[in-house]
Image 1: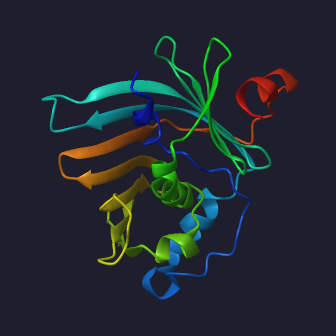
Image 2 (image 1 turned 30 degrees about the vertical axis):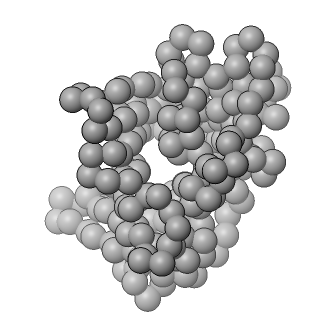
Length: 206
């Protein structure tokens, strides 16, 4: 597996809760309430399917895995593919923990993008506001979209970051550099506030 592709996935959801103040004038009340609800669980676990689209391939590369979140410890991604490392993001940064015991940190040139991806998935609107404009859409069928579009002066390589959902559940995330270079993550219904065992905390966090 190309390790750089791992950095593209949702490398966040590890920060404590915060007051949702930026973008306030742009967000309808329903969207503000939704973001607060999404950020509320202290722990979370759920399965995902990740589709990676590139101009070099006619069809998407599809991988699956499980995300685990502990607000005090960070985020952990485990992929179902053989020999895939555990991906950990916490206040100390990004760590890849390989099956053979090796540990690997993110390349320096990934720092800026990782910071913004992290902000997206912890709903850190204060950080996102510096690089993105936000558009919120509510549909009659109870589906919704939050689209973060890169500002002209921003340095992020991601042109657009999109959160899609229905009612109170986040169902899909799209991270787009271009229309043909993007990652789409479909999220299964998560287990909210699970209790991780001491063994799980050691294995999936640091």
